[in-house]
Amino acid sequence: MSTAKFEIKKSTNGKFYFNLRSKSNGEIIATSEMYNSKQSCKDGISAVKRDAPNAIINDLT
Image (cartoon, rainbow, N blue to C red; front, side, top):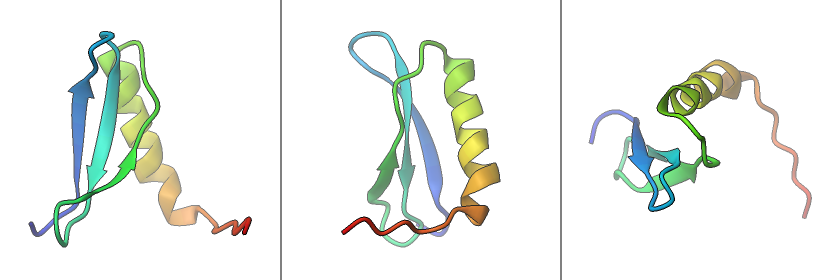
């Protein structure tokens, strides 16, 4: 796999969520919350794309 990938899925309760897969090996590296609509799920993906480059690491260990 040459690029990271967002996958939109529908759960058994009818809600939508996304997984973010690694570009190096395709493993799931993040899973979203549940969304009531597919559009809300897509908006969540957009928020991750927009906000993640500015995210700080908050190590609470």
